[in-house]
Image: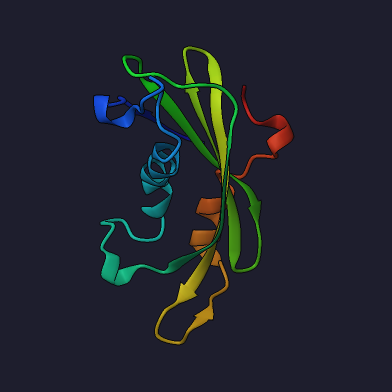
Length: 136
């Protein structure tokens, strides 16, 4: 599991005084950088071997400015060429949001999915956690 702390900025808030719902997908993407480095260590977009097939975010509680948010990231499914990333945003010991993204290992030149094999598959499997057993 990867963890990353995000310090909310004032501009992350909305008129209701909490973190705007549009910020969570951005924070989740930022927190996936640790996972992305398994594919592209220098994060060079010209070498990018992934495409996004699905994204969902469920809001569970309000998040606020003035206190860090911890983003937890792990794999909940590892398929042949795709995998599901599960993420949670925690603040003050409370779950604020959770999300899932399905990513596909992809060859942009060939326009086709590529199998996840060898060392890459092993590195991904090291972060595979059954969601039932994910830490709370």
